[in-house]
Length: 182
Image 1 (spheres, rainbow, N blue to C red):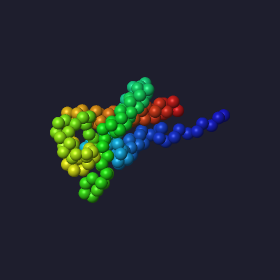
Image 2: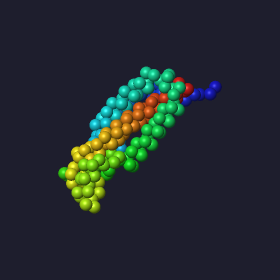
Image 3: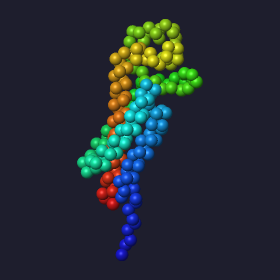
Image 4: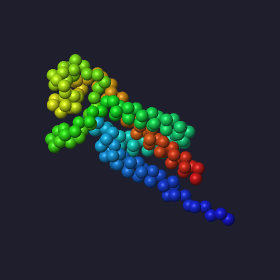
């Protein structure tokens, strides 16, 4: 007679599934906020925590349906991550020694300056966007870019939410798959 190892506790108790979601929700804002979320979207760290909690609950309730959709969850999560990385590279300006006390900040910017933004930059002479933000303040960024800024901001926020939910649903799929095949 072959002895089977007992099923791990985390596979048997749904309460731990909820505890895991709470732990991820508590840790994710501090870990993610430091580098992934621009200052203007700082609230999305808290909102992202709520999406983690709700996402894990949805993953638990709809585990049978989500189990059939593991591949799309992974593909969507990867696509959202790639989009966020590209947005981070092209549309986030890191400004060091900004504010009082001086700290490093990351600001989301738009695609192209409008006339006011270009005039502000030209007025600084050979100044850079980084110097313009330090001089005029980050609250001027939406004014300098106009509608371009709103488009980038919306895409960034939606990509972040899709990434969070995609990862949560993927984790929910994997844990459900493991639990049902144990």
